[in-house]
Length: 169
Image (cartoon, rainbow, N blue to C red; front, side, top):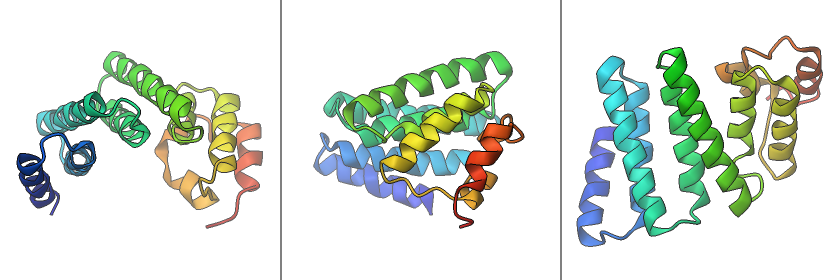
């Protein structure tokens, strides 16, 4: 399904090669494929997706959705890499999310919470989750429970209190 979607976006780009939304959507499809693969194939698909996001951003530098999606892709890729490479990818994800935040407050907040949680910084993870929530992101205990990025801070008392304040679903 995602491979077919990628082909459709490629076709659309032959008709209109300067279409950042099509590049962003194609990259999203590549990320979905990468998450279903392992090893070198997964890495190749993540890298291809990142190239599409960067091309979309070249065409539209203030495209906060592409910045946020690039950050998400980098975080997903980081989860498949050895520690040193994962740290490098998380730093890039943080950078892209901060850029998205400058363009549209709240757009990168959830990913910034994930980066902080992965780094073991519960207080900053909470702060960014609160920012996400205050700008309209719907959070719930179920969403946080399902996101493994929060595993490192999940037992922190402040984090537990914050999560308990969220609706169940």
